[in-house]
Image (cartoon, rainbow, N blue to C red):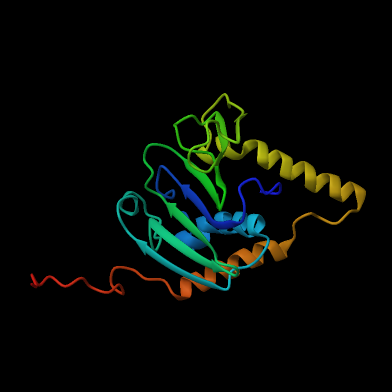
Length: 217
């Protein structure tokens, strides 16, 4: 992105999907505030700016029946509009039964970057960059190994264990050096404000425009 090899960014797609429902007794303010906060935080960081509009929709499809946790949806979408003809799309779900899915695709006018495509390989994250159609080789391909934990762990630990450790070390280093933190409460608030804007326009099957059942000519 920084080198400009994939051109102007016009869309970011970010997916976060659990393979199981929220645990029994879990307190959730809703699927989007609980899950999509991470996606929106990522998108704001990648885009370097804040969207000017947001809309959302959601459904209850499967996993909500398997838990006592009462969430509004178990599957939802969030659409964001930015200046300069750029959008972002967030997909979150509790229904990806094949395994934890964390993917990001950054679309540019000259190519795209794909982070973390799902292959049921929790011990590695693949990052690829592609030029326009017709190029013989990808612009980049790299595999980031993840730590293999000895015992059973929450599925997000397999994917983000190294990131949690780096986050903690950064916090400790800043405290020791009396330096400002690289991220503050304002970053989290910005992401939640975007989620809240989308929630104010949320559409479920009851609010969606019904499709006519007439045969027509």
